[in-house]
Image (cartoon, rainbow, N blue to C red; front, side, top):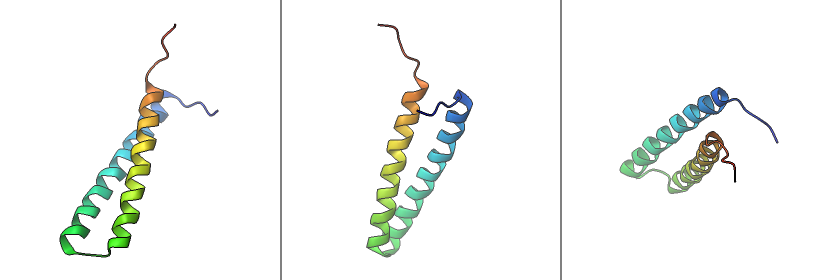
Length: 67
């Protein structure tokens, strides 16, 4: 498994969160203008993938606790 520094994780989280917000804005714009529903679904699927990646990276930031 790849290991990442806390700085790399934080940087990647920042990029993914920005993309997530941008997709949210684009999806809202498309809905308001009645644009291509298929494209909106594709963007929503990408947004969910980003959410999963963000959650995994956030979990990596939590230090392991000894049992």
